[in-house]
Image 1: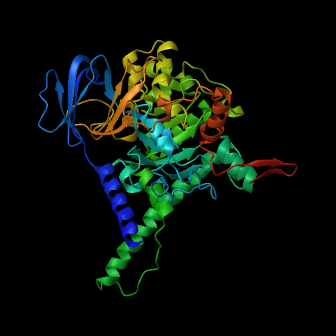
Image 2: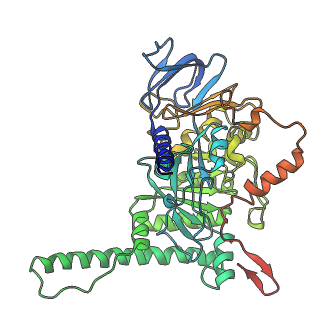
Length: 463
């Protein structure tokens, strides 16, 4: 029995080690969509120890490095999803309007099958977000989809910190209607933010005064010890937001509440923020550009609740035309598998260029997450996060054939015998399978309100 346990532990360690490994591969003769330096036909991409070292023609294969022939295929950077809840253990800590002290870094499930399905759609990195039950929610975590690795190995090393804010119905329902505390209205949402920022500034001053006085006392420069000011992680996190150490990603729909938050951020000197969903952002595109605000939107998804009844499929194109750095996200375990199609819709709705459409799922989300120096485009010196497509990624007929992270292959359409899509059941009911999938993984299954469900009764809303 002891030998079996040791063997099992050894396999776990070796698998984790495999997941951490930086790979090397030479991809040859493909059409390389660099995103930042145009498209290059019949071009090779060399990845060594996880880093892109050369992009060019007729690159000789270094000794011992695997070669992948991409003739007739397209090679592009791995897709980045700026708003995701896959691979999460928990999503909402909904017990207070402000829970900035919690973090999604401790809520990662590296064995979630949705990771594999995302890899099959060419996705290599996601922004794992806290839910939207709070005005100021928990901190998010940027991940690389190293499927099957440990929780720690999933994390995107040195990615900037981010945090989730939420405006509108979600926090007002959960806290105003649910607990009869502020915020009950959109006015209350603004005041929760201002009150807590003011409290954070007071905490910063009081805590620093205490630390200075304690140091003076310990050095004998003060006769009596100071009254302690206890460390408060929630307040420290809010201070970090004000000081620009944490990027804000805010759940929002209506243009009036987006304008409100930009005014609040201007008052407190907060400059790095992205509006998630932002279905009415097209109404205020010039104002967003003026404030250097980012947006991350659905391509054509709205009317699933009252506050988001008004939008347009031209939203992304209007934002892009106004110079707003915009990304297309999924917020879904289903849409994440075909974000290339979601980006393609912007070409149809608004005649966005193919190049700009691809930016919305590569370099633009990388900019929003602060990881654009490492991923989001194919450039020498960047991470070897690459997807090979059977045709142009914006075509509905194209499929991802291989996905690499740090040069290590995590998806191989032709070489994975366990991929059930390679052997479909022709007798299966598509309608039943689609209904089951949507109920488990669609908008109702992996939403921003997961873990904070509200039930209606004659006495009102109950958890």
